Length: 230
Image 1 (cartoon, rainbow, N blue to C red):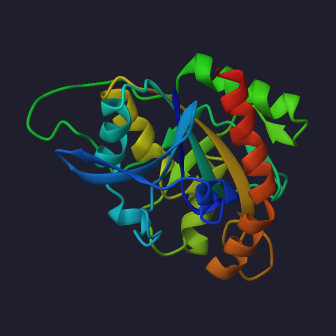
Image 2 (cartoon, helix red, strand yellow):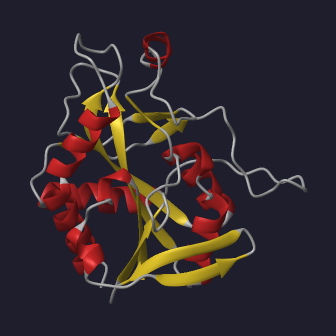
């Protein structure tokens, strides 16, 4: 079994209409997952898709996954490009991340982990994208902002010197996954240019419209992950 942990990218995923959600209780709160034969899908924004990025209960989501005996997590993340050459429609398998709004499950004891992605699972994600003949990059740095608002042009000008893509969820997930001993990697979909990268206005409505265009591709990716993990 493998966990597919998604958000905006899977809001309207047809697959989710095939299964009813299953409740999983953890010490951090309740989580709903969609169980399939070889994988589960968990929407980080909740069953009602209404939890904003800065209120996502990452400890509950990842603890729920671990409680089901699952050891591997592939996250699906929608992100913005910090580089005009990284165009919307590109997929990226990030190899590092930035986040200074720290997340942890170790609030009451000294415990240091070295953050990062699982190398073998990253290679698996790269193979999936390659075999599906998708336009992708096999590395990139993800910068996480807090949300729920989009970033200012000044913030983007700062971040683009140090990262390739920007989003609001991945870095905290990756850190807590490592703290829980879960193997974690991500496939990011570039759905827009970040604010100010090009001379066009940016809105959340535009981002959602771009995300919807990728639904069929995300479903192909999920099914290929399940096929190769059997």
